[in-house]
Length: 390
Image 1 (spheres, rainbow, N blue to C red):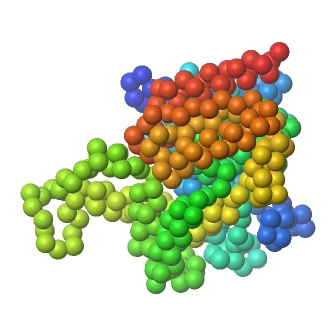
Image 2: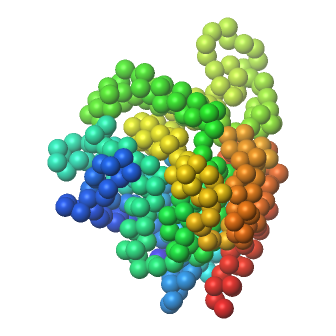
């Protein structure tokens, strides 16, 4: 890794990072998925920053949300204008301090950012998998990450950290491998999707599948379902914001005009913004991956899968210290859902800290710079790390 570089005033980066690839589950030792299907080989794209200490006790696994990737911080080249997706939190002297911790971030299976997914090549057909890619779950994602952590020679993680779907992965890590996780930070997440969250995901999926170019998932050598995916992103993006953030950012202001067009152009700034978000999304994400990942999130139910329907029983299997964080304006995963998981944790005598952060930017607030969030995460990790060194 290169020396630290400074792109913006007062913002120190981890520097140049490299996307790596770990491949496992070669035939005949394919990965057995929760569905019962066997799949292999499996490839995971991942990145690391910081230095693993001598006793390998300072490793932190960061888990990304739906459309995220392994590029959590730093830059691929000195010319890059945009750093990793959580560069405001991960780096030297930041909330997750890479002068102290060794950070691993893995792309999830089913994605399109370097790991095995519907857009990667099926070695048996030498064509993209498309819908031949098996349906995967949050649990399957964790099993793949576990193989990566084993490959890196790490037997215990100081912490697992993630927001949204990444937060579901945090909870699943703690349920499946309690002996491997010292601390956990689930942010803006839930133990299971509400009917509202499932409904939004289903409408988004239907918008993709209704696009004639979707072609039952076989679009990789022809026109892509760009309109369907753009609408899906627009739907999702609305759930990531909040009424207050949209009021402050857009209100009813018009876009580059003084009056209505009296046609179906984007008259309002919020319309133009959503169209822009949809257009940018189709340039970097795969429609089939969107289908697979949202389905995995909808299937997730911690209490059903680990506690015979009881979240209290599910948390009884865990041993990590928890920092649970919610945001006041998050209506996709509202605070009452975080409070419910905290209550279940406390019934099991777990070490739990809970913080509801005042934020007007909705569900996406966990990704944005926030001094209180940075301070809370920094303090929690320092406590856990100092305790582990005694």
